[in-house]
Amino acid sequence: MAAPVLELRRIEKRFPGVHALKGVSLEVHAGEVLALLGENGAGKSTLMKIVGGVERPDAGEVLVAGAPVVIRDVQAAAALGIAFIHQELNLLDNLDVAGNVLLGREPTYGGPLRLVDRARMRAIVRPLLEELGLRMTPSTPVAGLSIAQQQLVEIAKALSIDARVIIMDEPTSSLTPAETTRLHAVVAELRRRGTAVIYITHRLGEVEAIADRAVVLRDGANAGALAKDELTHDRMIRLMVGRDLEAAAPAAEPAAGAPRLRVAGLRTTRYPQHAVSFTVGRGEIPGVAGLIGAGRSEVARAIFGIDPPVGGTVEIDGAAVALNDPVDAIRAGVCLVPEDRRLEGLIVDFTIRENVSLPGLERQARYGLVSGGGERETAEAMSRRLRVKAPSIDVAAATLSGGNQQKVVLAKWLALEPKVLIVDEPTRGIDVGAKAEIYALLRELAAAGMAIVMISSDMEEILRVSDRVAVMHEGRLEGILAGAERTEPNIMTLAVGRPLPDAPAASAAPPE
Image (cartoon, rainbow, N blue to C red; front, side, top):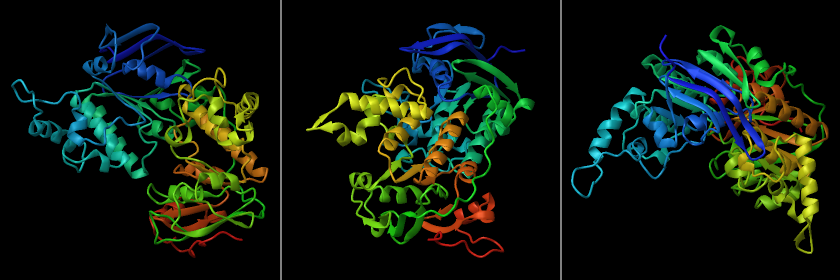
């Protein structure tokens, strides 16, 4: 049998206070899709950063096509035919597609000036785009592309270096179902070409659909491997978390609570022609579903005061509030966990303590001076409550796994004891164990009387956690589904702007 195209032997890596990798080994062969699984913090990203030349191992060996290699940097990895497509895409939106695909490798004319040969760039990139089925030209500006199209441009970049190993880190976390299907078709074509794909995802259904094998990490060490016929949801979870997760029954409709949040005639700047109205009672968790671009996040941002609404009113506990900015919202008891935790939810260079205390500095200050003791006490209490895994509250948020970063975002708002909590994609890119913890936390908060609005593109999450489902399409609230109507087919029907078949239209607003 041919040697693995990539093999890692007993890889070790330590960071201050963290033993990230403990003798991890894996191999992947040409034309194979290998799923790399594990909870956040299991070591997946660190391992792949070593392969991609971003980090150097403390011990262990890397072999490419059977030969030991030292991958000193990203350029060395590319020279070996290794491409890493990060979850946060690394494209420059001020360049066109060709400029991104050939960045740093642009062909030039002869002569001392070494001017870039744009025509040759387009000639190199055009067949790569055609091969991927991309309906764009090499001159298309990247700034105007969707996330799915940008993912495929990253793959075109990998093909341009004739990559024999492509690492994809959470490639479908921001894609629609149709875009995900397209990406999976591209992965199948890469397999047919003989390219090895290492596919990192928390969506276990995708693993069952496209992977040939899976390697599972837990706490920085190998937890086991699964062959194609062993790739079942339960077996993957058991290896990832070391136990069976308790199955959660679908959410039941709660007893009606007094209205806590009332939104009437809200019009956002993106969809000013559509007015959105809904009410959330104490202890309720309505889900907000819809395709990307449906206007869900815009409504959340307007309620939180980030984007001033064009019209409409918001009431908290029956009293009208003016939410001109997030400060107004916070004082009214409204908090928002944003969709992009790294860009909008955290200051990643700040410590856990600084992030948790930031929105509530007024509470920690006396005569304009912040109490260090009070700040530390609050951060430690919230970290314990949400079970944030970190050496201490004084480590930078950037060093945490995605799941623990999300817990820190939740912690900073829960420290303020809000009346209304809006969570936008609360478990995007985090593992099944952390998801279960966040679901349990949301139910606990609702049981205590908090009103929680949950925006999610994860259908299983919507059906599992929410009491009712509000479905949006192009800025319009198409309907709210409850009871037996709350099904995946009904949600998807409304999400594409169609009425429910053989049934009365869902109500435009929940019961008062």
